Image 1 (cartoon, one colour):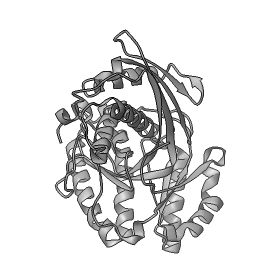
Image 2 (cartoon, rainbow, N blue to C red):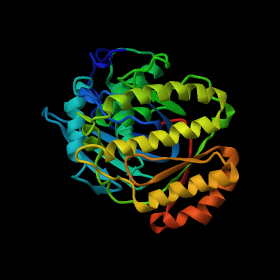
Image 3 (cartoon, rainbow, N blue to C red):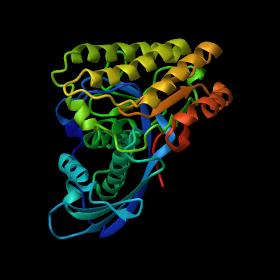
Image 4 (cartoon, rainbow, N blue to C red):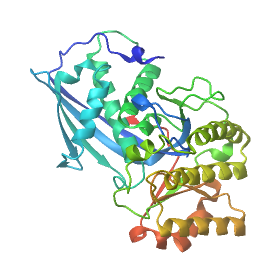
Length: 361
């Protein structure tokens, strides 16, 4: 597929009004995407677990209008939100070529999260993917070219559009594991959209658990957009991009073999590498908080003591994703309650697990 394949070439505007609603999950990258080229193209490939409980629920109501200007209102958790409008405006401008009907309708975008916004749980991923899916449902109604309800095309274009809103959003359309970015070891991988990982997955990784420790529920110190830009001219950037390719290829083998020890090594190394790139950029940032480090050290000590396969990963923020096999749920949750919750803001944490992707409501 190329970008040209996603251009809507023929449509009608017979529908005066209507609404669609989707729930789309967040995702947590195991191999991190950090750094991008023009048009939201990743500098390196990534792979993520799709989550189940952490999601954005978005309803888009569309009403036909006469003028040809972009027109939309955004509501977040019931309140009109002007702060989100510039990002949606940019998104519409980027995708207009592929969805020319955007100028024919006024859109009311009503959205809410099941988790704290802008706190390092990839709210932009779930949020932009949910909007992209709503727009795809509208396109399906307006499209005059019969595609026999091609779900593969629907998902690929939704992922393609979501990527133009937020890069990691392209990995939130499907589940359980999604790859984004061309990599020699992954057939059909693409820089344009996320693809469902079709390699062998050992039973060790089925229904994998993710408990998110909310160390800091405030706004992130550095936006992801700014963070990605810091990779331009970074002295270690090219080696990092190569490392990501190698780690993805190795992780493919690990997922098939069920080797949890090697899984832990790659996942934690990827998390720390992401933060190392931020600490060695110019300007430089430390996104972890003291409690983030306390949690990491507690996890290492617990693993050494019990031979548990629990591990951590991080996004570009202070919160900690605690990953572990379903078979260890009882012992790890007990550990979290006894030793880690005290490091969370207001002792707040979220229990999640691998999910199957977005769904229409």
